[in-house]
Amino acid sequence: MEFIDLKAQYQYLKEEMDQGLAQVLESARFIGGTEVSQLEQRLQEYTSRKHCISCGNGTDALLLAYMAIGVKEGDAVFCPDMTFIASIEPACLLGAAPIFVDIDIKSYNLDPQSLEERVQEVKESGKFTPKAVVAVDFLGNPAELSEIRNICDKYDMYLIEDAAQSMGASYGGYKCCSFGDIACTSFFPSKPLGCYGDGGAVFTDNDEFAEIMRSIKVHGKGASKYDNVRIGINSRLDTLQAAVLLTKLSVLDEEIEKRGKLADIYKNALQDIVKVPQIRDGNISSFAQYCVLFHSEEEKDYVAQRMKEDGIPSLVYYPNPLHSLKAFDNVRQLHKGDFRNSQEYAQCNLGLPFSPYLKEEDQKAVIETVRKAVEEYRKIY
Ligand SMILES: *Cc1c(COP(=O)(O)O)cnc(C)c1O
Image (cartoon, rainbow, N blue to C red; front, side, top):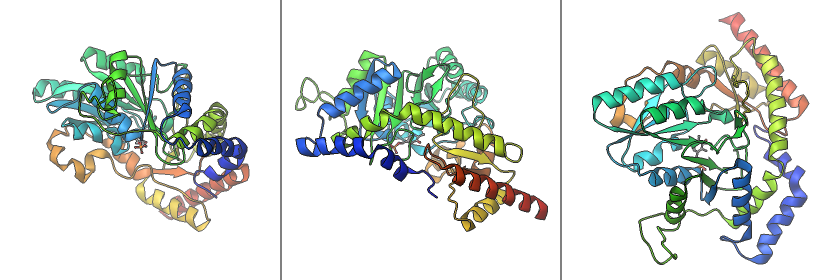
């Protein structure tokens, strides 16, 4: 059994995929080209955004966004304590202070009330200027985007949507990537819209930000590539990856629907024994991963071991809350709040095999093993 069945997806799309890739190989145009501009246009339409700009990966997308809004030393950027480090890392490279915020244990997403408390503390301390919030659609579940937007407006901060895990998801009828001053996504292979290597994109309705990001991703180009007006980076989406994404985008909505159905099956079969992710009414998650929470770390380890014995893969997403990482030792004194929920999540979560191509009998086997293992564990301990 595969954890994420990319092989089955390729078999399903093989004809169109091979054709799209062959076209690029025959044209021998491996950078830029029609595939890249076509993909940007499709994604811009898909998300109803004014601009979509492709780039080398999701981390670069976030770097472009933080550079465009002018993040610098002396700024504070607020980030959920449970996410991948890339959500905040580029802001730290630019000299900002990362301020971690606890999550809501039902949605696993940034808790707006804790956010406002942290913002007020930073404001009162006077050491940093609250500059931006990065709202992560964790595991594909849209963040509380309108509540977070209100807090950003109230304290004059930018909102960056980290939609690396949520392409295809939607919040209140609007697609993820359509929120925030700038939204960022990743096309890493295991993401809901993944390519066959690295890739990413930024989205914005702001013409000025779009122009800045288009410049930065090409070494700070001005009117031309050799007329450099600022210090930038090199961050391109390969033409081959754009061809892969064009093929996959054509089935994205169909896949999101399948993901929703499979998630419902897990939920109905497991919610009496473990915590399952809660998706707010009116929202659609892209379920980049399906992670459940056991009662304790020991129970989770026991179940993971039993799954392994039955040949069922599982993964912890993620094992460490950001505030606990060594990389952030230098900002430890900034951590005021408690991280009760992100800590519980980190200790107790386990990702179950999940993809739109998960077979019915495989999902049944996962459910059976998890239920049996939990029963065993709770009998012994
Ligand atoms: C994957 C991911 C990123 C980074 O994307 P890369 O393409 O791997 O650089 C950023 N934020 C989140 C939440 C992610 O899951």
